[in-house]
Length: 138
Image (cartoon, rainbow, N blue to C red; front, top):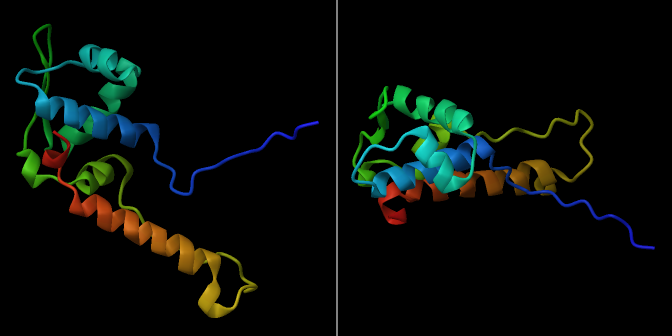
């Protein structure tokens, strides 16, 4: 008998962050405004979810939006001037390192899995996202 194996991701990238990043790439490549319906057809996601995510990017000045039948979203910044981390934090807020929450320390101080491994991966994720501009994905 086979046992069900549960798998998880070390870094959990939310659907909202993925939608935001992919839509920003699509909008950067587009010569015209695209609305939530058009974007939903391209990335196969709910137009309502896309609209909510992109409104965060509008609020932070990365996109402009126009309502109405000829409306849509357009990039408001040069793709060279925005990093993937800018987009990520607009949607999710800043990534952060949390210290080990156990009150009773189990690991040796210099080997704590939470503070050494997870913190290191989080820092590397942030550094990588800050080093990548939107222009590199066009």
